[in-house]
Image (cartoon, rainbow, N blue to C red; front, side, top):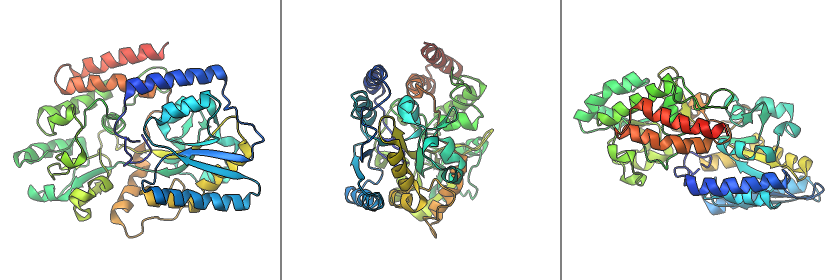
Length: 425
């Protein structure tokens, strides 16, 4: 996904053509391993090349933002040239892995957490260029989301979160003034909502959807996780995973979420969410639903809770790749990541700062302020190698359970057996 809460699947965020992309990416990464970790760029280069993606969707504004930073940095670093290239979100991993393998990769690249494990052997740990003061300034959520095995794999430049959001109009229609905070709360409201023609929530079970936005939040809320602590095997088939999938299956079977969405992904404007027929959702942000609900009708709440209140959020980071000028490229990353410089990227795209010292970007905006307060409750998902492939094995089994073809226990066990065999190779 891109990082963003709204990026086209990171979409983009919402669609992953797993099989074809994974195969191409695996081949490119294998070639990278054979060629070595370096990119082939000379360490004495006076030019820094950075690859990024349209976090700021408006092309003109995106260009103006980066051009402004480049001009200021080059003014402060005589003789250094910075080239920022913006690529499409689609097929970005295949393009990047192929470039690295052929020795033509960038010095710096924008990555999100679930990409970091794939490029770990190509990444210069941020400890080599990040100052202690900058490291101490990052929020726990931001830093944890880019850290694996004690190594920081990038410098965060923005954060996002998907809290629970509810349509105030739906609650008014059933005469309910209290919003759900727990699984039990939502389940208790579901029959009343259905009786009045509303869904309790909206769940996207299409196998092309990222589980980070759909099933994983429920798994985390139940107290479970995708992998064991050492990352050597899966953990989603444990009692917590079974509890989460059983809860979800009851919502589908009871008609408390649109069953059609278990297998299809229409455009948002064609869904019950846009039609004002869904009480609450964790798969959309206030910005997503604003054109349909209106700002005054959107309630932002903490993620639902069973054992814990946890939602999905992600972090956009700049990673330094091996083979280039670590010192100068590290200085560029540090420059961009400073709160006063990252603010332009964050605010223009509707995201949030990664540092504690950053100013409030949305004073007087109740929705953005409410979302920002939920960021400490966010989880960026597993940072283990092959996590995307595991997701690809798990998604169809979850769908099978929701369609009634398998029990939750059997579906999760089947996915775990296949995934553990892959991880053990």
